[in-house]
Length: 394
Image 1: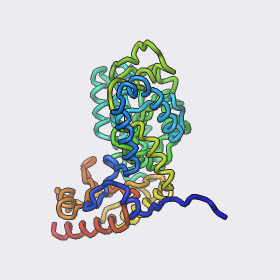
Image 2: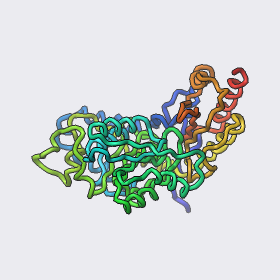
Image 3: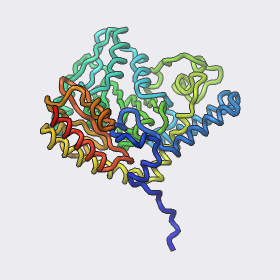
Image 4: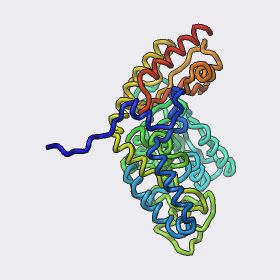
């Protein structure tokens, strides 16, 4: 007799009922800010209620053990040591911590691709200007074809002045997966510090920090892992942790009761705040395990594969990457033709109630489609039909 507990239903229809999204909107933009299912949101509120029931006990005596327990769960999920990560509000915050703390010298270069997220680029340029550091964007031509070609194109930007490499594992504007493990390996041999932007990674594709071996990594839990907003993590290799000074100085600096490391003292708790989003991250991991999220991701990719192919056929534009999970998973950017109206995003939302981003990158406009567990092939068909009508009247 089989006594195994059956898995909950994880069809698009069943999952859509678990999310709190407006039922009148076709939501194809999970990549921007994520969305949190009701069971995880309830855990989030339970933590808030617990905090408010006895704030002094919660924040004054118990917070350290709560955060340590949550860190142990998320560290196992991203395959690293719990003492090597701290919770942060978002990836941009983490990149600021690193850019602020690294002691570089005038003329040193931070090498990045030209596919990086604008807020993080601004962080490097802002902090770099204080030390006369050069933030250098290395062009990665489209379409990308192979990891070797990518490495060759990127590494052409390395000079004797390159001290830091900043690179996204999954890019925001082009939704491409870059071979960061190979970049980290090559950089370590060259004595170059690596900083990886993993904003779109947890929950969308497997992450093994130990195997990747970056010096620093920042990633969001509130996007594809579906944790509450304001839940992310910063990782630092043990030998790099002493380089990081706190972005916000609080009790952890010159601590009266030092913890396991200076890294944890400086970044583990910076003062009165609501840590409920951090503490809910383990619930997000558990939720995706219970709903067999690997199969959900596979289904999402198949759905996106069809949407992507139909968009290219309709728009008559070329793919920016091969049709391979090596290059993209649940998010894809498709170039738009010149005839597409400038207010396309607004028309899609206002006339057809479709939430999907349209933006310009390197003087080329793109539409970026995200497919999450609550999306169905019908959502893609609605987007395609709306585009057909809009282009016909353009």
